Image: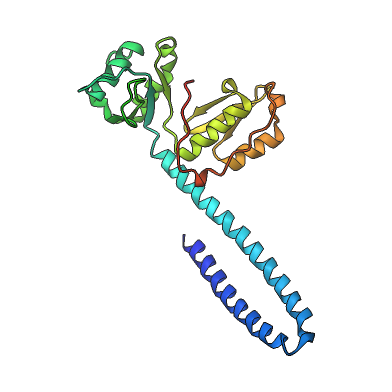
Length: 244
């Protein structure tokens, strides 16, 4: 952040100084027309400098945003989302989750005490149950539950990783372009399989757009228009999650 702050401060100082010089020269140019070509040349040089500086600043912001997002994802390693778990009033969410894990995943020694915290997301809806975000006390327990998720097939309950809004946006864009069966998440990263079975791991929109450019949808599935992901650093809302 200090580097970014110094860059912005330096740019503002240079910008204000140069614009003041231009203003003075413009006032003189009214009486001295011969100075106009020189002033135009100086302006082109200054405009080029500003464009280069802003591009550099944008890259620094992107790096900081990516580092911050990566730290947030690391803080969610012990977490996951449960979808489709029936909801009732006055329920103990931890007990509900524990019962699902014991009954559906056949992890009989699991207890609610192994859950650090859990709660349902969003407003209560009559049409469908809200997803449950679960944080486990131990990463190994979380992984044991995660890798047993195939036993949920046919139960109407699914699991997904608890991604940030930015990374979830990239995940949904990848699925839209390459197809649901070719994209999944693992340890917070998005994995894309191409037609040869090669797996590509991505985490941000720039990596997705680069992959889209080098691996068109037609090489993976019979899709049409490529999807270019928007910058997730400016995403403000989570896209609707789709069941796997």
